[in-house]
Length: 270
Ligand SMILES: Cc1cc2nc3c(=O)[nH]c(=O)nc-3n(C[C@H](O)[C@H](O)[C@H](O)COP(=O)(O)OP(=O)(O)OC[C@H]3O[C@@H](n4cnc5c(N)ncnc54)[C@H](O)[C@@H]3O)c2cc1C
Image 1: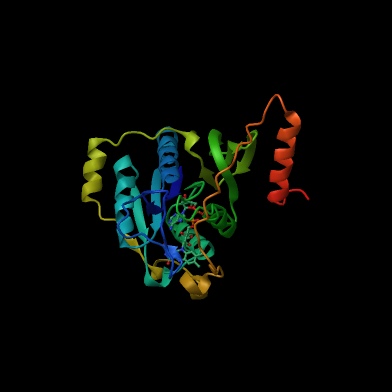
Image 2 (image 1 turned 90 degrees about the horizontal axis):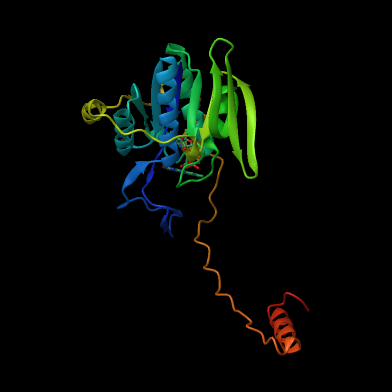
């Protein structure tokens, strides 16, 4: 079993600040972490390796600082962690990001076929949840999103059965391998890092793949390959404080009149 896990380095906060001039996230001064959902993707890949043997490869597209996230992945016990980094990837939207990740996975698969690709359900900064499905579409493989449980995997029949988390329950799906899964936190509890893995991580220098490391169409990279235009980014204005009409149980007509006046004033009726 060869599993590839995609991880993203994100700011360690959900209170993201926005640069009003450039409409981009302010990342300076905010410590970085591995996107929390991706930690669960790593854990699941390691559990599958424990069951079936094989290999876990982690990849991350990002600037040089993303090395720290890859070292973190090594500390959990993955076999290899690759940084995908090149100036040509700068300004990538989710379409261009998923293109680079898909081409990387193809190149990895040429050396050792990939059975499963795992992603988090979404990144806590960009929050689009588009990259996983984008990779699966580009690779032409099954995509199973919001996976909360892997029921079974049959490597001979090349088949996987999973449970997807839906708002009102769970959906059971059977799909062909190779497949891409996006995972939710309830899938598993992450293990503690072992001392030997932590020592290996401290010494690990992630290999860097640039634009020449895989087959690619230059027009689909970075800003050139990004059709998304961000017209405005803003923090929604805080909601106005609500009012309570206490009412008078002795005089319900007065209470109703007060309520109707308020609804007229707010132009909800009238
Ligand atoms: C016009 C435009 C320009 C942008 N320019 C930049 C820029 O210059 N620099 C910049 O940092 N961001 C930039 N972004 C943001 C960048 O496109 C997104 O952060 C990225 O595509 C991931 O989207 P997301 O955060 O919504 O991830 P989601 O789709 O929510 O992530 C889901 C999962 O996909 C995987 N994943 C996501 N991103 C990566 C990654 N990079 N490597 C490995 N796995 C990943 C992870 O498993 C993650 O859990 C830009 C966005 C737009 C729209």
